Image (tube, rainbow, N blue to C red; front, top):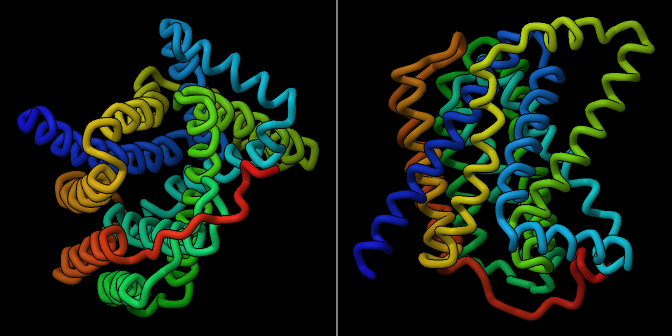
Length: 325
């Protein structure tokens, strides 16, 4: 059992590296297609196809989807689940637009910091999963340490273009904020159905619907020709951009059952930070700026995440949450 547990912790690191690779692939995909919305539509369509195929071959997953649809009809799961797709779209658009500008490591740092701030707020006020985990002074200090880490890592990159680069950092941070909300919404569905597939399918369906609505408006306004041109450039290797998301979600569901959410989240963040730095060195984009401050800031953010997870909360039952209607 010890060997299996250790192997799964190592696999958590690998899953985090896959997340970093997904961000890099989505960035190159958008550059190749020439449009972020076209890239997002391809990613979500392939993600939906992969998740649907995996669901069809798994009886328990099919039963969970039927349960989810029944809960939607009865109003046991509220309208808020439709927000999961658009929130995930913002993350893909942020990857597409900013990784090539600031590099993958800085993108990961600001994105993870946004997730950290949002997750701490969700837990502190009890906005998800029917529980409240109040932030302790140590937890607040951990958030400040993470902020110091991302500031330290970003300062050498600002240079003379600090105003425009700061706006990029704010966009990535906001995408991280929304991603934690998306994960909280999906987590509520997973808790209600017992499987991750219904939440994944809902995210992709609502995301594709939102993208098609935006693209339709763009076409009617005469500004959507770039999307059509991008969709005409689809190549076979784009499949990789679509399958990584479902693979990460399903691997996470398997790993958490053995090692727990705490160790998995730590491994995920460590793998994402380490993987993004390795990719910036081995496979840099045009805007990659890697200095001594990048690993220092990453280490500070990782320590802050560990401290927040271990000593950052006072558990307390919450009165409300999104699954309360």
